Amino acid sequence: MRFSATVTVRLRPGIADPEGSTIERAVSALGIAGVSGVRGGRSFTFEVEADSESAATAVAVDVATRLLSNPVIEDHAVSIEAK
Image (cartoon, rainbow, N blue to C red; front, side):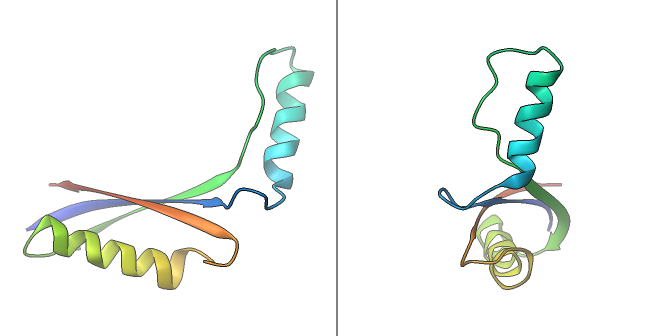
């Protein structure tokens, strides 16, 4: 079966996020009120060929852990959808 995987990578809480801070200041400069706590991140999508959803999830988690994120400063979330 073919699955679509999405991996979202974000800085861990407590790690400085200059991109998020810059976006937050820009939102304020645009006159948009009520936006705070902006955190940047990255999103990756790819396809996985696997026998089951749990096997596809395991592959996506392995890719996220070993390649797409730095586990010292980043967290990742994986979602899988059957195609």
